Length: 371
Image (tube, rainbow, N blue to C red; front, side):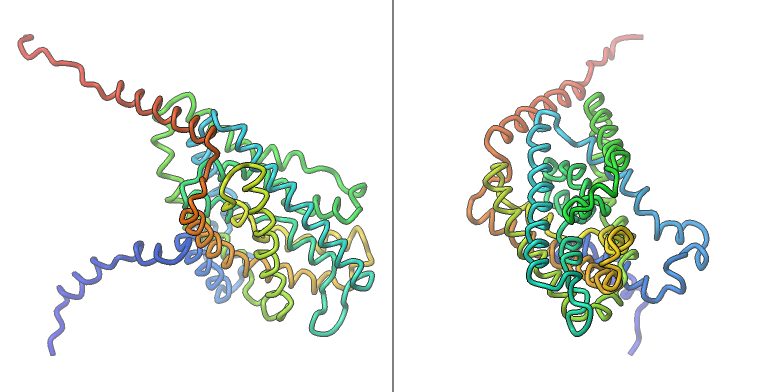
């Protein structure tokens, strides 16, 4: 049987890779994320990627911050200032809700378990520290990716408030050791800078808004792959079943609570609450940081770290899938993504934008009789 290279080439160029990936819930986020995690497994030295591949590729694998800066500028450029009050309300609701929930669960677990948690057996590492660290921090990049995939710019813009959870600060407060730490105001300001820059550019010149808007969805698979490269798949084997159960609890419990808060406080449909039901990668460093400040947790810091790392990985997979299902459910139930007043302001803004565009595209009549 003769094989026609032309036919093979024709089939290859007709492959609908993007359409196939998009059939998976949040596929443009999940597939690159998983590929990044797999690359880390086979990579010779994932902690120093530029030693094996110096140059663009090695640097890209650890270049999440640069990619996210560009992405946040682009997202900021699409933000409508008329809905900024709603954005702040949304971000603060998710932030306060998740921190209070983590604190409440930590107190309950602290009363049920020994002082420094379980130190041996199948549930080794389970403690108030592991629970609070897993529940307290939201994967902001994942949240942004899900919200922008769903074209929910106002929800995505709540990220700067969610970013306050990053690092051990909120965990220290929740665990009663805030006096041993200082508020990372510079980190918060640093997160706001690209958003503000994008908002300014998009507000001053509509051409910047048009120029940067397509960057938002296009950058998702790139930063997802770098986020995946930072995830250690072996953490699942180190933490065992307890790590997986922790991840499921984070998604189900925090997702349910935050969804209710999102619906009844911000007047939305609750989808953003589910998108915030994950564990941030920065949470992996929290048990070690806390153990240095509170030595009673030192014996379980390593095991707690494995549990948190597993929660990071598993929630990165579960959260987008469940959020997409909840978004479909919200649409079936007729729930509105934006409150009526906010939707009206957005509609008014879009009409003004369209009118400006129409005015700019009006052709000036050419005098053909000249010359």
